[in-house]
Amino acid sequence: MRRWIHRTALCLILGAISTVAVAWGCACVPRNRPSFNEVGRFESHATAPLWNMDQLDGFGFSRVLWMVMLAHFPGADMRRVDPPDWTRVVWGRQPTEAVASEYIVETASGWPAFALASFGTVNLDSLQLDVSCGIALEGLQSWEDADLVRIVPFGPIWPGFLIDTLFYAAIWFGVFFGFTGAKKLMRVRRGRCPRCGYDLRGQRAEVNDQKSEVNPPHPRPLQEGEGVRAGCPECGWRRGADSQSR
Image 1 (cartoon, helix red, strand yellow):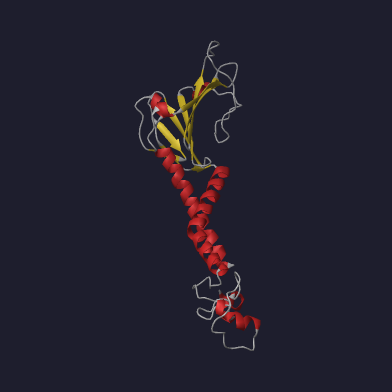
Image 2: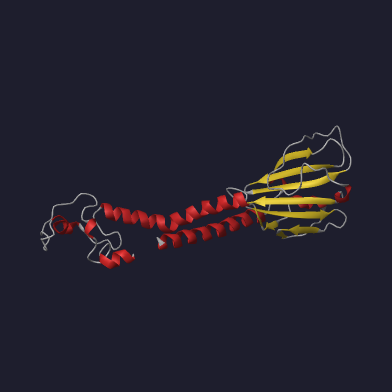
């Protein structure tokens, strides 16, 4: 039992490391504007000031750009939708004019679910990018560069982080122990010791008749798994105190 607990803990740790590595990889891949799937621009309220949201999606990556609009454009092709659950901007609350000079950049990355997120603000006057829960890998030449700036996220999105960790932990478990378990199972089905591969089929006389100490010279072929119940005389598998300690 202790051995399986250690194996599970090891796979979970590797799964968490893999989750972070994949999320960082998806966030740091250089992108260009045609590679994005532009979801659209949406207004949050019927009266100004209002939020304008622009969502850009890629493989294992999503970015939401927020800007406060001080005027309403009736002819603009905009509609109200719900933003992603991982965003920090309070969508239902009308913004104030105090943040009208800022451009908010939120990024989520990870696969198969978004696991890490970052939050940043761009000062439209100085083009200064301030990032919380992340590190920007490059500066801005214009406010339009906020679409493509690469940011390494640090903030966990817990549902997605847990899902990705379990997903990669299962893969690591299969890589480390799946092949070994299959090999042991095949050995048992063939009447061999799962640990060392010693042929246990000759122990039929010992299993069926405890008085016989000598195996027949030509034992009849056993059915799958027969002879394994007595354990292995070669390595001690399933025999006495040695088997209990293992």
